[in-house]
Length: 330
Image (cartoon, rainbow, N blue to C red):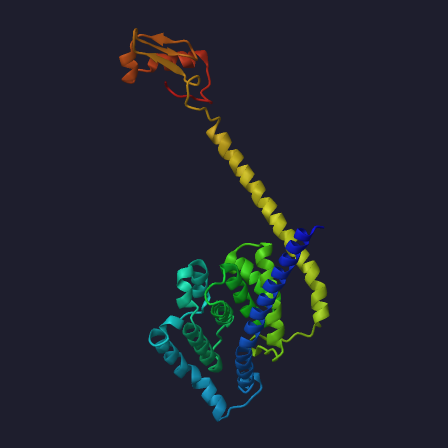
């Protein structure tokens, strides 16, 4: 290998390391930013467990918690209609708009807009409202990357940072990658998957260092061990896939049968072009109409044009010619 090739290889490797380090740094920042979200979830979980439904008893605190939504919901609606109107919504539609329209990024991913949405989500969560955090977490990741990149990051890296926010908030790197590919970009390409996987993995690890919350509202007690559940996941998944394939095959067969029935009713399609006509019309230098199926002729062109087709119909019936294919006058 020559000196030039080695220099180019070294420069390429150094560039990849720099890009990987930058993506890992963004994932690290996103993971750290998810710590407050996880802390709010843990606090919400501890408050939920004080309610009688989850084994607690009625106290002054639990009474306040039970009545909190009646106060918090009107307040949140007023804030979204007023001072925090730019932070209204789940954050996912605003994130999609920012990714699709670069001119909207400074507004949709601004620090104030993101902080307002997180504040609204935090207040709703502590009031024990069943509010999902997918939108705020994804926007947090994209907004943080947008700020660190000073608004110059490409769309793919912003989408990957949004997936990292989701991964850090739920400790699910693969879900973050799938979210980027299916929901944000709607394409599976290596230049998108690998950055997303790197950012999401780092964000999930860093966010997990502060502990992961248990979602009391989503806990379902089961006597089966996780290993046993995983053992049954494979045959159930294969069975569902085979059932889906069978349904798809039946749908294709039904469509083919329907198309065949329509073709039988419609008959053969004859193109309306020269050579496929059933009659020839000659207006000059002489006048004649000739049926090419029965060789029936007449010089009364005007009569035929006026609708006098009886001679042609009678000759056709007499000859016993079937009209299945049809044709076009020319």
